[in-house]
Structures are given as structure tokens and as C-alpha cells.
Image (cartoon, rainbow, N blue to C red; front, side, top):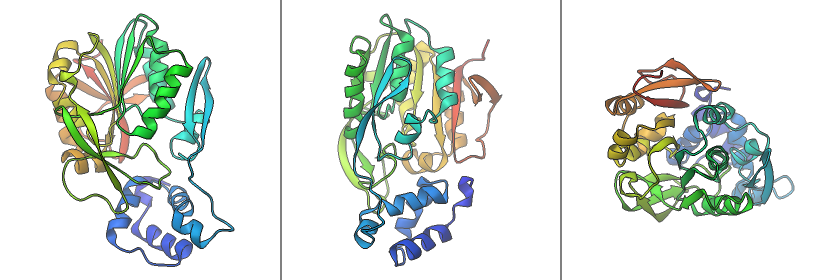
Length: 314
């Protein structure tokens, strides 16, 4: 089912059928419409909730943290939480963002210096570390402590301490601290996002975390590639990295998440694309591991990957 097929009625009836009650307010409905693309994902969210478990002890599943180590590719191992059904399980099954992984395999080379901004548990960071080899470097930024802990364990497991550095911080427009909000009960450990203004979504917790601007961070140079997935804070990352981007001209692989861009950075997808264009980048969709169609206005999908290429591709 496409993302626009999940409606308010789906959420309301899921509450009625699975929890025997009405949703308490619109504030609990909207995060589910934004966070899930299918009724299957919505159902899994509810049946693994504490409320469902309490009401249905004989039938309840669980989202209790269950960490395993998985072989994700020849010679690469990753610590994964099995309760993370939207990201962790697809990673183990080799189904998570295959086009994006194929693309980095084509454009990142031995000896390169690269960044993973919003590294989650380290799937991309591990692949990048293997690609750059011992003469290159990967700097991975991840502010959510639970994910950063798994990433750190994977760095040690793969003996990448010589080339892969973890910075447990958010990345934004300035250095200091920021607030990170997340759902304590969730099937998606990649859903934490920076709070810049407005209300905290219902049922979410908040932590204060360090934040850095890339222009303020000492990094090996030149930076050749940046993978960026920070749940709507991407425009803020660009604001804090203007000098580095103009000097190093890295290729950027970034998520374009319409709802999160509005909520976190207060911009539309078209405004985000114009920000990249103003920095001298051309923007493209992915087609397998290649650049696809050029995009000058936002694609219709609520979430997609965009490649920002410095200047025009040769």
C-alpha cells in the first residue's frame, strides 16, 4: 500500500479493534500517519505496545530490545536490535536501501574521507569503512545513545578503529546542545529527531544531546562523500557546513522526507532542493547504482533518496 493509502480512519479503527477504545486525541493520530506507510506497519506498532500487551497477554508480541550480531555482507558484521522491525529486520534480510548501498559502492573509493551524518546503527558506516580502506576515513555522527552503542560495538567487531570514528552528537546549523525527541515504544529506532520548535509529539520522550556544525569539526580533508539522513534536519546540516561544502565539493546522498523537513527545519522539499542548488549542486534520483532523472522540484513520494552532485556530472 502506498504511503498516501494510510488514512486517519485506519488509525482510528486500529485503536477500536485492537485496543478497544478511541484514540485519545488527534495528537496521537498524526505521528502514526507520518511514521508508517502501510497498515501492516501500523498494526505491528500497536500489537507491540505496552497497552496491547497488558490487554491481550495471551496474544501480544513484544518490542523488547533483543540485540544480535549479523553477517550483513562478506566480511562485515553488524550489531542489530531485532525489535527494530522497520530497519533492523530489513538490514538482516538484505532488504534495507539496496540502491543506496550500491551507489556508495560505485562512488566511494579507497583512500577517501567520508561522513555518515545520521549513522543509526552503522550499516552505511561499515560499508563505507570497507570501501575507503586503511588509508581513508569515515566520521559517523549519531546522537541517539542506543544506536550509537551498537555502532561502537560494530566498529570494534570489524576492527575498524583505525579508520572509523564515532561522534555521538547531532549535526546542525551550530555547535552546542539540542533536544532530541523519540518514541520510547517504537518499531523504528531511526525515528528520533531534533526538536527546533513546536510541540513534542504525544507519547514522545526528550533528551538533551550535543550538536555540532560540520564547519566546526576537525576532519580529514578533502571530504569526498556525505551520506545524510537526519529526519528533517538536513537543511540545518547544510547551514552549518557551507564553508566545507564550498571548499571540498563532496557528493551528497540525502534523504528527502517531506513531513520531517517541515516539522524540524520549517522548509518545504522544494526549498531544500533550492538550498542545494544555491550551493552549486545538481540533484538527481537514484536509478539502481546510477544517477537517474534530474529533479528540480520535489518528487511526489513522501520519503525518497536524492543525490546532490557538485556542479554537473561528467
